[in-house]
Length: 76
Image (cartoon, rainbow, N blue to C red):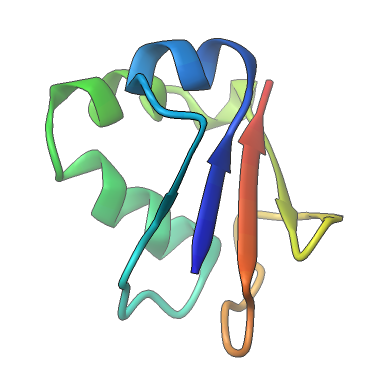
């Protein structure tokens, strides 16, 4: 799936978007996988209460399912 990063999330990670292969069932699980990649992801996702998420271009919650999802976007 495509994962997009905006504003300071993009600045911390250093990428505007990337293709991610994941086994995560929810956005929260995806965030945990990303945090485990390396320090820049851990820093970007340290406080998820400061983030919003869109799943296939619709505002969502971190407990949203990822089955069939093509795009997840994170922004402040």
